[in-house]
Image (cartoon, rainbow, N blue to C red; front, side, top):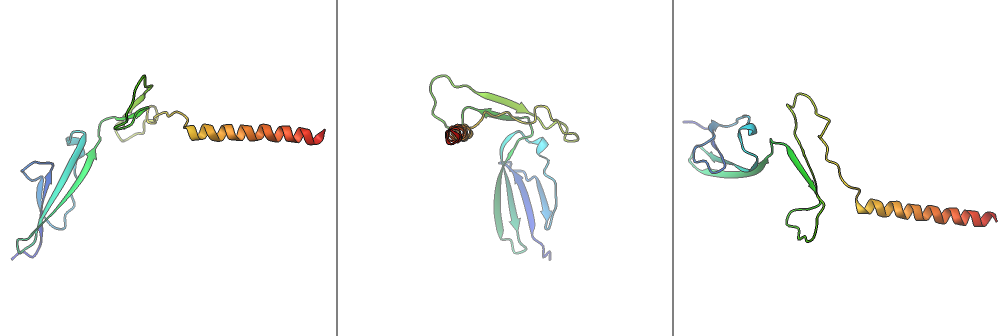
Length: 135
């Protein structure tokens, strides 16, 4: 009698298992064969008495170029003309790092502008009060 548990690994809604293994196992899931988007890894385990356990692990595959969008977010309510900044960048061949296009430019956030204006206002106030104390 076999005293080890076995596992069936399914990918998405495919009725055919990705693999059947005796535990413990180590295997590589090659996401390059999957389309970009949401997927579910479903693991069904069976113990020697026949009881089953199920675990589902949702994950997102993004092998294609990454897309960054600034100016609109998911489910945002908008009107009028919306300025958008869109950037797409790939990982290359993963043997060498591509510096060009690997970072998305962003506009300066409003809170940083507020800090700069407050600092400039304080600097002007300090300069004026320093001049008045010398007179």
